[in-house]
Length: 334
Ligand code: AMP
Ligand code: MG
Image (cartoon, rainbow, N blue to C red):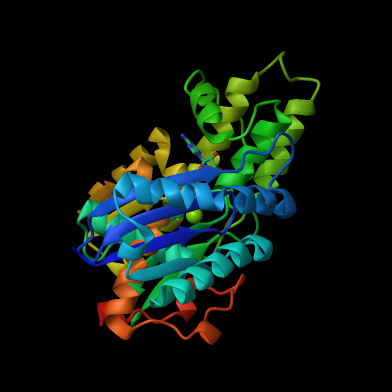
C-alpha cells in the first residue's frame, strides 16, 4: 500500500479532510462548511459546528478513500494563519491522531497550501499566484527560498468585502457568486474608490462607498443593484489585476496561478488571463474543488514538508494565528 497523508483544514468556515498519497494522487476530499444565518463568521459558532462534525467528516474521507485510519502514515493540519479558536480544534484533533496512531505530524501554513495544491493540480512549476478568498488577498511568488508577498490587502479580504456588500444588499451568504450574476446584467459603471497603495490594496473605502450607493436617494432611480454590483466588481478586480501585473513585470515569472474561492469568478479570470498573455505567461485557474479551502491542499503540503525535513515535534505544533507565509522557509524548493 502507498504511503498516505491525512490533512485537516481548520482555519475558518471549513472543516476539511483530505487524503493524498506521497505522489500527489488525491483519494478523498470532504468539506463541512459553516454558513452563517446572518452576519459574519462567529468563531464560537464555527467551533461548535466543527467540534460536532469532525469525526463524521474524517470517517467519510476514510470511506471515500476506501481505507482504515490505520493506513494513514502522516497527519498534516493547518497551523497558520486563521482564527485562533478554530485553528485550535484542527491542531488538537491532529495531535491526538498523531499520538494515538504513533505517526508523524506536520503543521502547515494555509496560504502556502493554496499555492502547492495549485502547482500540483495545474502542473505549473514556478507561478506568480493571486490568492483571493474570504479571508485572504495575496500576490505571491517564490524567491530567495520563501513564498514572498508582493502585494496584499491592508484591510478586508476581497471575498469578505464582496460578501459583506451582498449581505447589505439583502443577499444570502456567500455573496460572491450572486454579485457575479447581477454584475453580468449591467454595463453602467459608477465611479468608486480605487485604492492601490504601493503594491498593496485597500477595500474598505470601496465597500463603504458601494454600501452608501444602496442607501442613496438615487438608488433605483438613476441606477440599480446590478449597476452597483458591476461597478464594485470592476473596481475591485481592476485593483487586483494592476497589482498582479506589476508583480508579474517585476518577477518575470512565466506562469500565473489564480486560486482561492474568488477564483471562481469569470470576470476576474478574464482580467488576469489578459495581463498574463500580455506578459507571455501561461495562465491557470486552480480547479474549483481545490481552489477553496480544503484538506487535500493541507495533506499535499504536509507530504512536501515531511519529505524535506521530517515531522514536527509535538511542542512545535502550537497554532500561529498571525504567522505570515513569507516568514516560513520552503525546503522542498531549494
Ligand atoms: P474560500 O475562503 O477560499 O473558501 O472562498 C470563499 C469566498 O469565495 C467567499 O467570499 C465567496 O463569496 C467567494 N466566491 C465564491 N464564488 C465566487 C464568485 N463566483 N465570484 C466571486 N466570489 C466568489
Ligand atoms: Mg483559503
